[in-house]
Image (tube, one colour):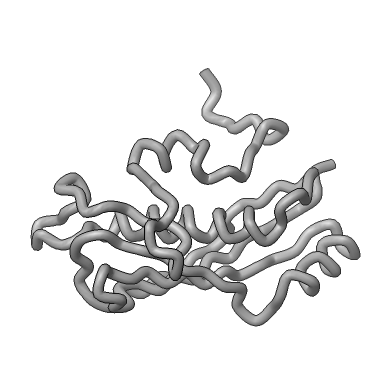
Length: 149
């Protein structure tokens, strides 16, 4: 069995990815947010707060989900996370919710560069919040997006 991915079959639906199903990623029950992870014992760390890995997984999936929604119908592209910068702001407890936005760009500028150069770097800022709307984490995900050859 090869450890190399079959890039021809890459998909961008975050809910169909086996890892995201495994961790219990869900659409947010609060319309102010995009995605969420429920309050589960399996997500806790040694301090009885939500583990950093759980938060990171939610943030990464949110960045992909955001791109998926912003570029619905755009085919023939390969998006890959290139770099991430993360800051954990406070201990997280209970359900965790996410929001996302482009950093220093917009959808049209991204499409223009992709059409001109066949590739583009895009940064998606993801913010995570607890049930009391406290910001618990911020991450900037730099995505490399290229047209498939």
